[in-house]
Length: 243
Image (cartoon, rainbow, N blue to C red):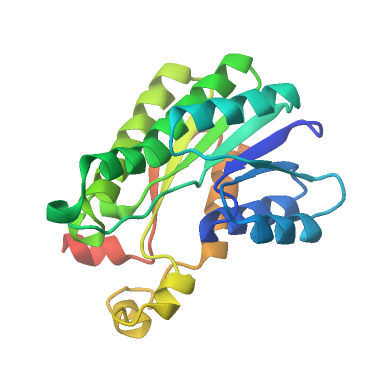
C-alpha cells in the first residue's frame, strides 16, 4: 500500500476494532478510525498513535443517513483508502419472541448494509485493494448468538463471497472469530470464561490481538492469493462443534 494511503477501520473503539487499529498502526499503516459514541476510547487511540498516522471520524451506522454522512466526510477529507476493515457491529442476544423487527433491521444495517455501502463506495474510487469483514462462527452455529446477530453474520459470509466475485481483482475476505475475550466476558455474571475455555481445543477465548494479526495478514500482500474466504479464528472451537 502507498505511504499516502489509509486503511479505514469502522467501529474502531470496539474491542476488535481497537485491537486492529493499534496493530495496523504498529505495522506502520495510516488509519482512518470511525467511532459512534466512545469519544474517550477514540481519544485514547489518538494519544497512542504515531504523529500523523491516525485520523478519527464520528459515524452512526444504524441508518442510511449516517452511512452517507460518513462517506461524504471521507470525500471531503480526501482520504485515499486502500484497505477497509468493517469491525463495526451490533451484538444483540435478544430472543426471537422479544426482538421487534425494527431492532432486527438495525442490527443488519450496522453489521451488513454498512459493510456493503462503504465497500461499494470505496471500490468506485479505484484505490481500494483489500477488504476484511468481521463475521463470526455464530453464522454457522445458531446457539452462539441471537437470531439477529446470527442472521447478520450469515449475510456477511455471503456478502464476502459475492463481493470477491464481482469486485476482483480487489480482494474481499472475512474473519470469523469465536468468543472474543473482552470486558463483557469478564463482567458477565452468568458466563464463565474458564468453563467455556475448557471446551476449546487451544484452551482460551479468542485474544483480540491475535485476531488483529489475522486481519492485518488478510489486508497485506502475504495473502495476495486469497479472496472470498471466511477464515475461522476460534482456537478450534468450531472443530468440536462440528464433531
